[in-house]
Image (cartoon, rainbow, N blue to C red; front, side):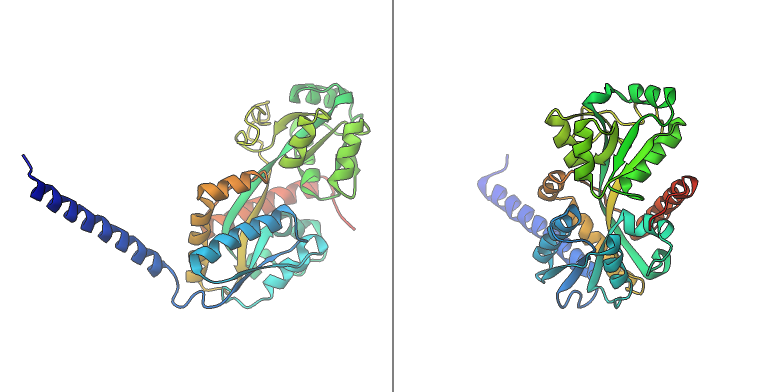
Length: 334
């Protein structure tokens, strides 16, 4: 039987042991940081105007990194040319870890094939850091179309080639490429109606002027929940936490179908490997906190982290996939 003195001794030993574990963990974390980095504010360039999902996610990441590092994180918006201006700016920046890019699927994996002239080369101008988040698109059908399932849509598209019209926010957008990927998989054709923005196309979808459209999770679900359109499926490989009742296109019969919109962090190509690896680890730590996961979910995004090598491979695979779709369908922008 242990007396009080024995209990107190055991508690003291246990406390000391736990303290040593805590100290060891902190020391390991500190050792992972490159010497002297960061010594001054770090800038995350967002290649779009303030207020969008890309900007919001950059600011969430910046807020948490500031807490961890005790250094300011500046989010700098450089919009224009579909993300090209901000992306090119970072490609030309000094690789010291103080200028980073919140890179998008369009800028890093679509534009290199879609655009005839582009001011950067993804493979040689950037050091991928980590994938940050992704969101699926939702397949919507107008109430007037009478289509209430993916199977209904496939039958209708095959029965009357080019009889149904679909909307997008423009040539070469994620909505356009995803729709062409979908049509290619089922061996059908439809009429593409490009708009200047998804707001206009969704208004016409609700009014029955177009039959269907793929759109971003948050806006698509809002339209469906308001009873102005039918949500039929999501384009991710697994069901979305934001819409668990919606099947994936793979579940609906298109085995292996996956098309998501994603965001990632990249640095200029000559950024030291130890800084790139440190940034990747820090972003991973931030994105795996419950509070950040909840805030990302409010934007329709799910955290998706990776090592720098994994992210490089991911960008290359996405570029190959979109290049095939663009070339097979002769997609171009002026």
